[in-house]
Image 1: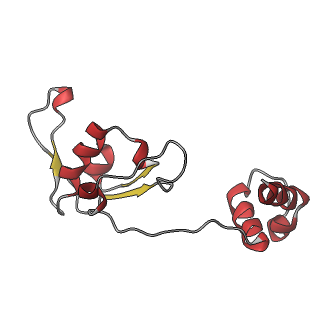
Image 2: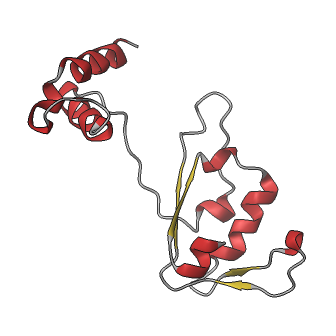
Length: 128
């Protein structure tokens, strides 16, 4: 609600695990740039108007993964899809891991992607 009112960005991770009711409510929000939603559960009777800078992003693993389902086509059509293949290149994985763990590992930033912790983590990931 706060993001919609104030033009913030929202990421819905694993959107395909959401309930059908939740997904249905998103459709009205995504219909067009003036899409709105009324929060009747809260007793509201006035529609919550979308701020022009509001953005909604969604991420999901393919429905081929265990326990996953596809998004309904009516909702899927409202998004722009970008497929990201699994990252398997050792060097690229080290760069991503180093950026993600920056600040959590006590190593000079210049050598973070070659630190023993990062190298070991990538090696373990690739063996799985």
